[in-house]
Image (cartoon, rainbow, N blue to C red; front, side, top):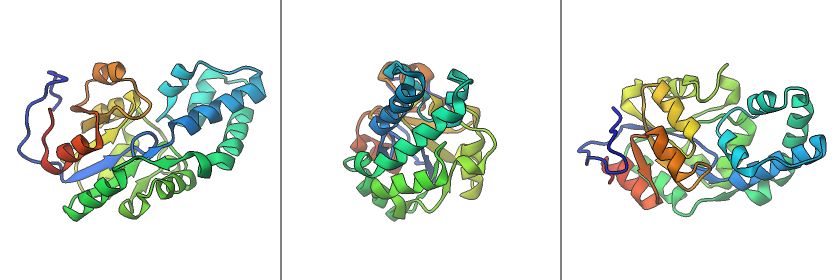
Length: 229
């Protein structure tokens, strides 16, 4: 159930047994790489850059889908150039968020089931998790290749929940973008939005997540003890 009293939410007495994470901007610090990859592709193919704030609203969606929607006449070339530049710079741009690897270890130690549902291709998703030092805690990743439709469609989240052996009401999705919140709503799943990624605080509040979290410490409180303020 969504508590519409945001940003002040009631204290919960139980935690979710399953946590499903977005990757980019949630578990790993990759937003700058994504923006730079888009801008390189736009400069190379179109001869100009794009509005950065608008690009950030695409993060979490299928890359090809976003490019096809915005530039259908150039989508294949933009996609090729983006991927080429992104892969060449992934290792130097993606880093771990402070506290996230330790939090993931704590979640697993506490007996929670964890997984990820992302619009990234599997190779890129696994590489990002390794660079973010959380790959060992996430044996289950639903990636772009695993579903026919992508966020805000609920398919990736529903598949992750199914693979983790639970119904949507037993899981929570954690993401940093409004598309993550929308996908969770569409899956009838609780959703924790974090403010250190691509989404603005105002946009995340407007999307009405179950909880809005500003720090990794507070995320731990929400996931391990089921409480937030």
